[in-house]
Structure formats: structure tokens, C-alpha cells
Image (cartoon, rainbow, N blue to C red; front, side):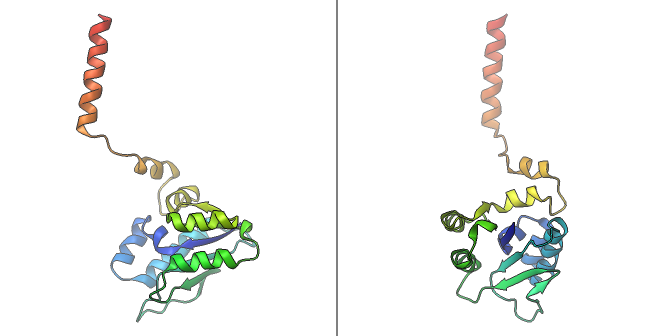
Length: 164
């Protein structure tokens, strides 16, 4: 399987990469992201394209790092558009997985016959970013509000009273 990945979308899901992006160290963020991805997807013949919103100014960022192809959008174009354009134009979209949380990109990919994986799902599936698979799933669960706790306490207290 081949992968085309929305770089910042995935990068913001990995704390160390997100910190670098926020501080403007895009070249280092991309390098770390590639290191994380390539470390988990080592298969021969697996093509990986990382699509980045704009080429950072004043930073040397190559178009290939450790076998991962890096593509940059040119403002005002966004990475989203490049991903959609790519998946529409590739000869065998069924051999590609599109990694993005953007629903429009996901819909385009599905319409073209490509597989789709959310950034969070991809991160968990390939265990990148220093967390185990279960940790990501737990992080997605919503927190319990005090109102919910009070509701359940009352419900169970009422059930206890009835059983006595």
C-alpha cells in the first residue's frame, strides 16, 4: 500500500512535531515526522508522499527525506488541494491510502477508490509519536462532566434504595 499524507494534519497529532510546527521550525518538524513514519512503514515498494502547506522560507527542506517524497503547496493553494488533485490523477487510486482528518479530502479519496484513514487512526495504527495504540484511543474519549457524574450517582443511589 502507498500513502499520501496531509503533513500538518498528522503532525499536529504528534506532540513533538506539533511543538516544532508551532515554533516555526518546519524543516525540523518535517524531518521528525518522516523519521516517525518511515520507522514504522519500512516495506519495500511502499511509496510515501508527505504533502505540506507551503515551503518554509529561509529553511532548507528537501523534496525527498529517507525515501519519503515531500511535496509543497504554493500559496494560495493548500495541501488539501494537492492531495485531492493527486488522488484524482493517479492511475491506480485503489493502491493508495489517503491520511487526513479533512472530510472533503476523505470523500474525494473514497470517490476515486482510495482507502482513507484519519490522522489519529493512522497515528494509532502505526504507533508513531511515542504513544502506544491504546493511549490514542483513550485520548479521544470525551471527559466526564460533573453533571454526568451526579446523574449516575442519583441513578445508582435510587437503584440501591429500591433493592433494600
